[in-house]
Image 1 (cartoon, rainbow, N blue to C red):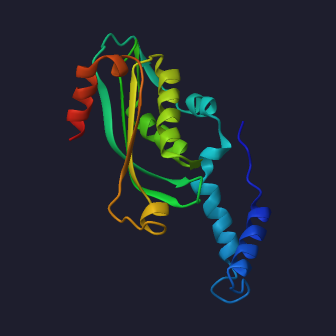
Image 2: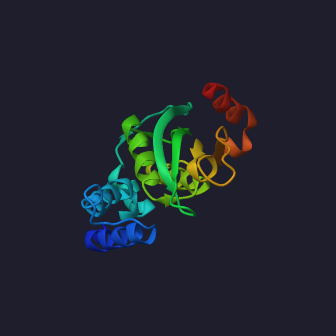
Length: 192
C-alpha cells in the first residue's frame, strides 16, 4: 500500500535546517527551497513508499513457458541512492543483475525499474543488493540470482576521508551462483 509523504512537515524541517546552518529562509534565493526540497524528496525517496513485496507486485511482468535455463544478465543499470547514515548521495552507481530462468523470464525493463525503485530509499549499498535479489527471486520463481552494485559515496568522497577515487562493490549471491564457481566467474567475466 502506497504511503504518502508529509510535504508540509518536510518543508518546515528544511526551513529549520536552513536556519540551523545560519542562513535566512526568507532571503530571495531560499524562499522556495523548502517546497522544492519537499517535491524532490517525493521523487528521490519514492521507493520508501513500498515494501519489497509491493515492488515485486508492481513489476511482476514475466513471460511464461520458457524452457531456457541459460544465464540472463543485465549490466550497467545506472542509478543513485542516499546513504542512511549521512543522507549523502551514493552516485555513479551501476547495478548488474543476473538470474537463471525457472520457467519464466522477466521483462528486461522491469529489472531496471526494480533497481531504480529499491535505490529510491535511505539505503545501505549492501541492502540494495539483498533487496533486488529478493524481489528478483520472488518475481522469477528462482533461487538463482546474482546482484552486483558498484558505486561512489559522497559521505566518503566529499567529506570525512575525502577519498575521491574510492568505489564500493557489493554483491548478493544466491542459489547456483553461490555454489557454482564457474557460473559466478562467467558473470564477473561478462562484467569486464
